[in-house]
Image 1 (cartoon, rainbow, N blue to C red):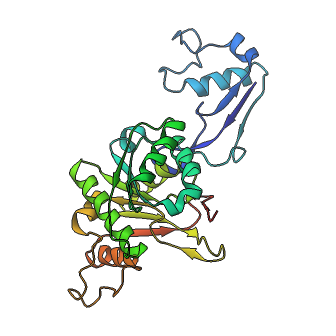
Image 2: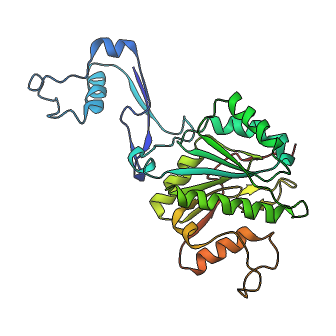
Image 3: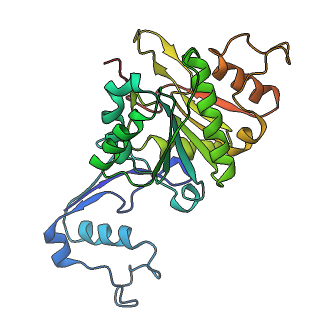
Length: 291
């Protein structure tokens, strides 16, 4: 008569509840039992509406019906703490380049299906502005309206790592200037689950991590795991302290090239007394596209 799936309680990840968060209730049960209490008509009836699910199931069993509570039948269940999650205003900010056009349309389709409400900000560092119009067409195709694209014209000879760092600096100023609580850095060649951002926000808030960075496999070799900013939630607090423009020679620990800029950013976070976590298996699957 009732198949009731257990799920973890919001705010208490080790405690399970068996209310009707996810349950299949047969028509036969609904024909016999309702949810409006008539207090005092049954000595076993609860004296408040709070345990209504338990009372519904108890009446089924008392009258000879069947009810089962199951665990693990449904895969990952993300129990959103909506009041807390929605307090964090998040910007999905991504540097883009025409060289990644092989993945861009599929990525924007992924963006369009995301569960957590967030704005999208793209910084195009291609040569010229032609690619911007093509990306706008992709956004229109998948109904994405809450986005902005800014073109950043950079010298032809500038290598990709510096281009990415300078694009990220534009995004950082966007986050700080428009009141966002966090930046979700998500590379445009990675496809991820639609609940990924909600899960990273939950972890960041519950454990007070300034950065939550899931591992993913390297595009060139799936056997290699990397922890760059391909898919990472970065809180506003550290973006206020640290940027992405390297000033070579000003710090003995600073790298001598733009390539390890993510590692340098994380090193400064730890050195400044804040915390971040690299996680494996929290966001899965992550498809790192190479064609």
